[in-house]
Image (cartoon, rainbow, N blue to C red; front, side):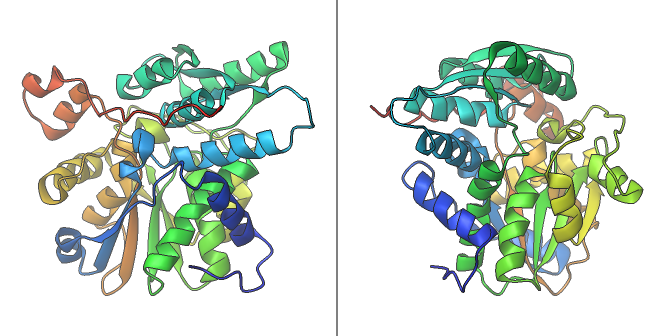
Length: 349
């Protein structure tokens, strides 16, 4: 296990988060990919957060944030009511947590978010509001709901307790492969890369941290070039979990600017190749957002030859129709039900 080494920052927060969420999440595998190693000339390992409970990394931050809120309650104080915005995976994860610990939760999402993400939110008992046209509209509606009802808005990417929970991924990677050279992380709102990079750079400053955005939605690329958070036009993308602009008040922009070595873009074709390759060569189901780092590697967008590389595969919640489209197969698969929905643990009393 990692030692503290006198750390007082992100590593300590992640270690505390790991104690909070122990038994509620799984330690996901870090596996070598012979296929990607041969394709890139690097020694490539995959961190399989797609195998996490709820099929995405989001459960780590959701559990830590909820537990931290409950710990801070005064004796006799009622649990908070929560509202959040989500492209789907964060809402699914937080709904799972809320069901178990008995929190009231409302989730605003785009109306066209994948059913593989929306249906479990409702099954876990959250008040699902799949009414927005875009992710940005979901965020606006959630904040308006919080202001009108007195509920607490929990951002899906811009909250210290979320980042600390996500930072446990960095702990696991460094424990399993301390000799890595480069870590490749998908980027949407920046919560994942901020949480992971905060831990990795504190423990191993020489590790290169590369972020990957979708070409169709690249607010960090544009904002880093401008030196401030700016909005971009968001196009249609397989990486629905990454699509959308940042909250102008997000804490992740400054963290990315300070900790991330570079940000590259992956095309839609890169993602299609990654989804198909992961399924064919590794037997792994991945959504577009989860496969974007692999796509960047296959598309030659990463300069990793001769290096020991970890690529995060972050989610597997893809509808069958979108998977069929990405793979270019017939409609037989599209009639399926999408990614599986693991049962959440029993509610705590």
